[in-house]
Amino acid sequence: MHLHIVSFNVPWPADYGGVIDVYYRIKTLAEQGVKIHLHSYTYGRQEAEVLNKICEEVHYYRRETGLRHQWEKKPYIVASRNSKELIERLKQDRYPILLEGLHDCYVLEQLSDEERKIAVRAHNVEHEYYRSLSQAERNPWKRFFFRLESCKLKSYEPILTRATAVLAISEKDAQHFRDIGCKRVVVVPPSHRHTQVSSALGRGEYILYHGNLSVAENVRAVDYIAKNLIANTEYSFVVAGRDPDEGIQNQLKQYDNVTLVPNPTDAMMQKLVAEAHVNLLVTDQATGVKLKLMNALYEGRFCLVNPLMVEGTKLGEACEVASTPTAMVEALDRLMSTEFTESELAKRKETLAKAEGYLDFKNILL
Image 1: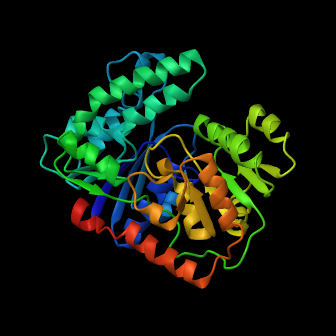
Image 2: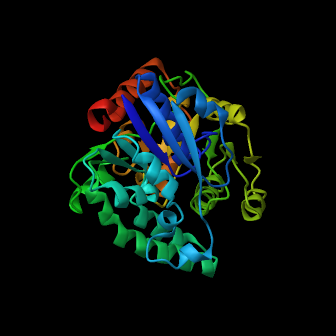
């Protein structure tokens, strides 16, 4: 009932995709009686007292960032997380280990010859994710770095075949890991704070898009929504999220039917999601599972998405899926004139129960 978890960053506060998944997995396992020995690299975050309340022990290690690691053969995200102190601490017992991401697979390099269980949580197919970052990046140096990192990650990825199990975030990703020869691959939906669907019945007054508005993927999503939906309908839209860049602010000022909500608090964001009539989420990157979609499905009314948002998951059954601007406008026309009813709520609960499933972590990890 003891488990080491190695995290790529301090998983508190749980305020963005990757660390939300890590934190709520720790919390779930602790509630199941597992004694968690947490090892976390620090990267732009402070030590968190709240982790001491749910873990048996917590250790922190400094991530060694800098140009030196960028020119190594290993991916930068791995080379900068290579604590020998961590390895020595893990050698002190035989407890199984869960590595959160390819980022932490220096441990797999050092300890995979030992007879102990070492599982890896794959938050993405990392080289695909970094390739998409390079395609979206305008800064030439960053674009070069992301492209180089993508190549390194693809070369490094076979390290996962040494793991006892790979916990993939979607069926699409799982098939990729099976194809490269991983021994055991299990689909594990993202962990999150929701335990039940709380969507309100009735109608909302607006359509919401939310996300981190400083991320290139989300900036492109806002541009798509503005040009194709906000400009071509008279519905009220709200765009909310962290650090909207100047381009987003200037673009949205052109339209009278949209409100920009920069840097909302968690409570305010929950309120916006819950009170919207339609949560609109689009992406041009089919990477992982978007936790903002999970929030919208558990807390919001109707969800309208494009196919890439739900690719490789079963969550499309809980959404309205439209692949073109014309189809999205037609879907909005239909949804904005439809109440979210008890039957819609029941369908949402049933679909999410099937899509999320249940994972007995103890059988896989312990």
